[in-house]
Amino acid sequence: MKEKASPCVEIKDMEMEVFRAMLHFIYTDTIPELDQKSEQVTLMAQHLLEAADRYGLERLKRICVEKLFTDISVDTVATTLVLAELHGCSELKSRCMKFILATPENLHAVAATEGHKHLEASCPSVLTELLKLMIKGNK
Image (cartoon, rainbow, N blue to C red; front, side):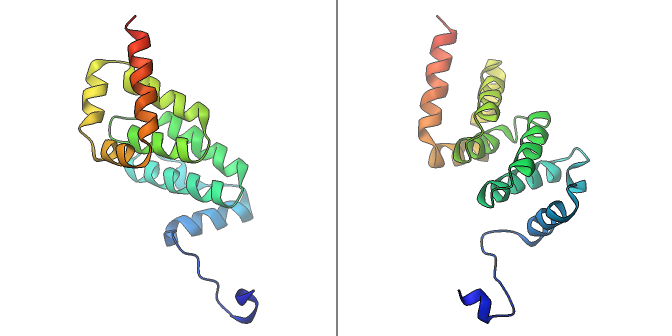
């Protein structure tokens, strides 16, 4: 392995703050970055969920899912839904779908977000599932 011959290991596709938070968790089993409630904290939880899944840190993944459960909003739900689909978080996926379909206002507001465009491009099958749930709910 080239890492053995080099004094540095380059971690690609991860922001430095996310890597630091993940390392902090590995060494302390705590994640103080997720203690508040803000858009930045939700974004950190989303990134940490991806990192936790990539590196097999199941406890960190569960913590991130719990944080994302409590912080679902119109602005974050579509991106969180993509992450839930891509990283096998079925309960989080279900909660996001319920949030989107809870009211027509939620559905329209989410459809107008940048996250929705990301959802369309990344996981079109999830939109099909949403449509089926919406039709099923109207019967």
